[in-house]
Each structure stands twice: as structure tokens, then as C-alpha cells.
Length: 520
Image (tube, rainbow, N blue to C red; front, side, top):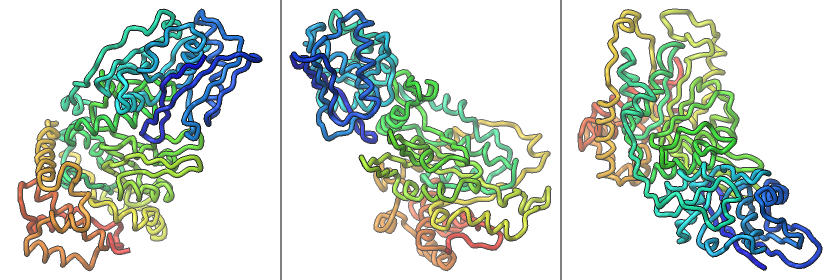
């Protein structure tokens, strides 16, 4: 007899329907699995056999053939265990198969029949919804995540034996209604009001948040760069519904917040499986190119750049990252996505993040310090600056110095709730951009004709831009206008005036003591 169970294979963030066709027929007892399975899928034979016997069913002593269609699509991962097991039991008439055609099924099986959680269930649920199927069957640990797709019958199962009397009771129809809690976000990342002084750096981060600009802070150790960066999520606007789904999907594929064995501890997702706050990712400076932008030989998974999508990618000790790793950021900084090519597939992950980087001015960290003399020679300064390539720096719109505040100002500082006030201004500025340019186009993404159409320079502002044209590249000149446009939006101005351009130029400090920024 032939049984067909619906399942999914993922390529990038997209789910593709897979028909798990199982035939139990006459012949010498054997188990054959075809359809471009990877090692984890091929090993399902032993897990499925043990799980079926441990769950009280009988293992058919006949010829079992499993085809994963379409045959030309590569199948990866262990979540085909449950659909293969159900297909065998349905083909052998040991379970009721009336419900099977209307549900997509995923889940890993233990040898004792337990159904274990897997990564990427949100992609499965979204694929089922797009295919018009009314329900999904997933591990019970992933059921909340699956409900985030909305309008689906979600059945969470914990053991293969639950199918003996038919389909278990569903978790219920769900439309995700959980909204971001701004106050919870503030408490998690801290408040800008806790930072003493640093008004220029705060202004730079406010402008960066309002326009989606990338920002680099340069200063000696202990000046507060990391403290400032970790408070950036608290001044960003809440995630909209589309962003929440995309961000949650990326984290689900990486096994974060899903309960998957290789994932981080749960807690980054809301009660309904959607991310409730903008992500903040902070990779160590020893990270590899694959860790930063994604990839892998067996599984192509999103990297830190994609996990920071719609949020903040904080790169501390920016100058200590390997140059090859930093240069791998050029594409996502420019295009907002990562394209990974392998022999078997080409995968695109969204990666439209806000880069916030922090760096020391030199290897010892004390170039220009009033507290301590720099111990580096001139050659060390040059080598350190060259770790940040010209094309990379040209993609960073804002670069500001962060000095050490006076001890009295730090000790006498009274913490205040400042992030909420900054967020109000940022949200208002984003709203002006949306009305002028559309929801998907922040000021940092203006280019070509869009830049000319939306910047709106006054005569004096245009003259101020021309005055700086000799000191920057063409991309740097466009960046100067974008930042000036954002400053005008924060002030509620329709036109960009000369003082907006001058402020934008002040937020583009030189990279080093003798090297102008932008002219490479």
C-alpha cells in the first residue's frame, strides 16, 4: 500500500513542500530511502525502526520504499523522521490516515519514540499556510512557534504512540496578538540616561537610529563605547508585524528560542513564538567569515549579520576583526542581504541591520588620550588603520570620537529615563521618512534618483555639500546628504538646511590623525 505524508525542505528562509511517499509491499524485507537525502535523513531508518517498535507498533517485515519528492531537491536534517514513521504506519494500516493529507508533518524521533524539537518550524508553518493546508503536526516544544504563522491548526506531539487512536488534539487556531513591550526592552538593554555626558556620541546614535545609518565610535578604553552601544535597541522603533515574522524565522532556522538542541536557551521569542524586540547581536572579534555572514558545508545557516536583521549588529574591538571578515560585510552593508553560493544551492538571507562598531584609536588604545601616553609607533598606527579598508569605511555613514568624561561628572551623574524620549523623536523621524519615501525606504537606503528626489537640499545646504565634495568619495558625498536629511527629519524640517549639513559633517570624523575619511 502507498501512503503520502506532507513535509517541508528549507532553502534559506523559504520552505518548499516535500511529499514523503512510502510504499510497503511484498518482497525481501528491506528499507530503501531515495530523493537526495543527506546523512541525517539517511540515518532516519534506524531511528524510525526503533521508535516504531518502542511505541507499541509492529515493524513491517516487508519491503519498504520511501521517496522524498521532488527528487531533485536536496533534503537535510532530522525532521523527516516523524513523517517517514507515520507514512510507514499509514501504509501498513496501523494508524488512521484520514487526517494526513491535510497536515504538514515534521519532527525528530528518539529511539524510545519521543518526538524531539527541531529548528525552523516557523518556516514549516508559513509554507503550510501558503500551500493552503489547514494544519501542521510538530513537536510539542515547537507548537508555540508554529502558532506564530496564524490561522493554522497546530498539533503538538511528544510521542509517536499518540497517533494510535488518530490525530491528537490540536493546540488550537492561533493568530499572534502579542505586541512588543517597549518598557521590557528598556529594562533588558539599559537606558541612555545612565550614561554620563557623551552628548556627541548620543546624538550620533540617535541620528543613526532615526535613519538606519551605520555608526563607528572611536575612543580609548573605558570611555563608554560598549555601554552606549548596548543601549541602542532601547531607542529603536518597535518591530512591525512583517519584521517580527522575518526576524523570528531567521532565529528559528538558527535554532534560537525554538528549544532545538543546538539552539540558545529559550526566551528570545514571545509566548506565541515571535520575537518581541529588535535583536542585538555582538560577535566576538575572533569570529570567522562563516559565523558572521552565514554558510556551512552541511547546513547553510544564517550568520550573525542575518540574526541581527531589523536590529543591531554590535562589533566591539572593530579593528581586531580579521580584515577578510570585515570585508565580508560589504555586501550586507550595501544591499541588506547575504548571498551564499555552494555547489548544491545558492541561498539568500536578509541582513538589513544597523551596524554599531566600537574601536580603539590605536593598538594600545591611548592615541590622543590625556590620561596616558600612546606607546605605539607611527608604523603601528598605519597598520592598525589599514585593517579597516576604504570600501568598508565608505559604507559607514557616521564616525564619532568618544572621549573619557571627567571623574566628577561621572560620580555626580544622576541616572534618568532618556531612551524613551529619544525613541519618541526617532519614531517621529521614521514616520516622516515613511510618508515621504515609503515604508521600506529609510534615509540610509536612498540612492541615485531616490536620493535626488527626497533629500530636498536648500540653496545654502547644496553649497555646503559642494564645499565638502573635495574631501570625500562619491559614496561619502551621498552619505553626507543622507545623514543631513535624517538630522532635518529629527528636527521636523521639510528642507535640509546648511546647519544640517555642517552637523552631518561633524559626525564624520577622520579615521586617523593624518588620514581624511572618504578619499581613498
